[in-house]
Length: 215
Ligand code: GRF
Image 1 (tube, helix red, strand yellow):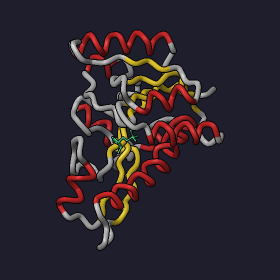
Image 2 (image 1 turned 120 degrees about the vertical axis):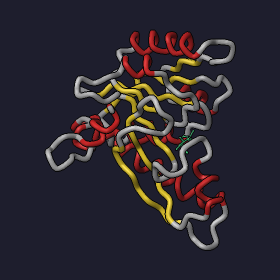
Image 3 (image 1 turned 60 degrees about the horizontal axis):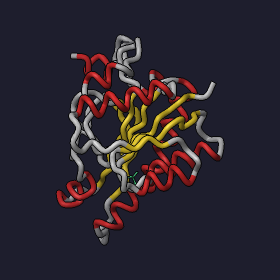
């Protein structure tokens, strides 16, 4: 059975494109049953439509967070979505939304990609902040989502260097190439073996990161 995923986007959609291509190449055992976007002008919408995907666009403007999420949840239910994949979605999800995707094992079936090595440089400007700080090594984090921003059990991290002659542009391009490789790899693993295989366990065999995030 292929995993039914919804990809949430707000902007350019380069991660969405990488995921679409990986699925089309047969590398990820998942189907994008819908693409959700809160920004009607996002290029990601054009991209998703060009690939013939179901697209649900709903601006959050003039709506309460709860009302916006409720409409999205209704749509996800109608598409039988099993896992939510955030790919540059610029809205924080509430506990109520996350509860709708709570796995019996205790984690939320919602995954996010962040362009730094968390917990460093949380927030919307990861590349800019890491570059301005002068890091020599940065990286990409893919994590399960909880109620805090850029927080939750880590599923994968991959480092990349900042080179001496890097500009912010070249630094970001190097990172994006890592993003586009890593997200499909993680989604393939989730679709194959579930999330547990990606979480670290403590000395007692408990899934440490989930336990920590539940406190
Ligand atoms: C990526 O850098 C991702 O890590 C961050 O937002 C950006 C989205 O880019 N969360 P794109 O829309 O996938 O091109």
